[in-house]
Image (cartoon, rainbow, N blue to C red; front, side, top):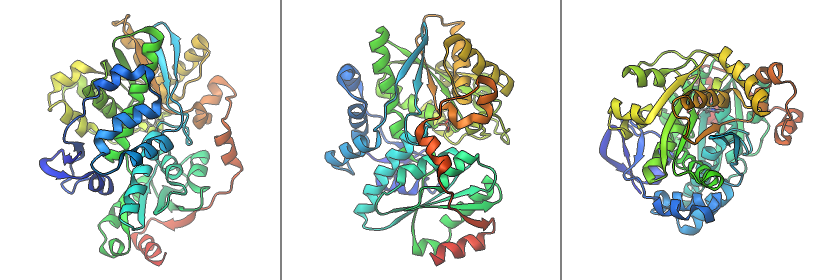
Length: 432
Ligand SMILES: *Cc1c(COP(=O)(O)O)cnc(C)c1O
């Protein structure tokens, strides 16, 4: 498969270039030149495991660059945790996407991308260095995805004092090929340092650099797998012919992958884009005007995004036709107070604990049901609630903390402190 830039259809590159570059030079986003037909997968899906689904879906995207054995290894080793569907009530289900090592759905994208990149590094016989700026969740998933991967080094930049203590442990306790830089500054400062390094000839002479950010096509492909996996389980549960997905959204990678799955032939009737007060896309869907804004901090902080980077891909998939997009996606947004009330009512009504992101998608599904009582809806639960104890505990009391999270609090943080000045970052990079 070749990939083109959304800004220029005739600029086509191979998978290696799309993955290692992450962003085309013309500031577009990479998209596959064609969307594979996966109706045969849908027809056979009852007999398939998640890893088998992953192999079948990934193959057309990767087969020009990787052998069938390599594709199988990437899928089996990287998509090695379950994504179970839980039924809450009639027509309402939850897809738990937090069973991976960092307890967030970003593990699907980050782990698969790590598998792809380590193969590419091997083929180039070079050492690949990944620079990633994180405001919290992404860094943890990337770190655990790349830990111990041969030929790849990861440098994570995070803003000192601005990530939660547990998130910080997820960034700073790996050791081996993962290095954490604690920057005295903001997330934007971290991102600016990374961006400048990518354009710095001295650094590029010494390192083969790549980025692991959320717009990388290698993170999008694996996010389609669990839509198929959810459909498999649901059609088992209730013989449903079509499904509606409610997706808690920030940068819209998750929803973009859902649209790709639909275009591949998965019977998806409708999408719900659920947000906190950062409602750029729901507002676009009602008004037809895309108006980016500075982001507003909320308790569902992974969705505090004022200019969602994957929106350009979605727009592209709908041929820039607002009317078509709003036929197939409904937007809902809620404030923190409503989110808190929802977390409480999910516990009271279903004896189930949802994190602030999933709770928003749950409430959107409920509101959608008012006019679509017979639709089968799957709510994507994107993180384990124990990742958000300061929000959760006052509402629902003690939460069982999974061992892989509990273990972290006993480990020692190792990070290099640094100012937000580019020169200090650069000399540190060059002296390594
Ligand atoms: C990243 C994240 C989201 C938003 O996903 P997008 O693909 O950026 O829309 C939602 N929930 C959680 C827990 C996340 O970490």
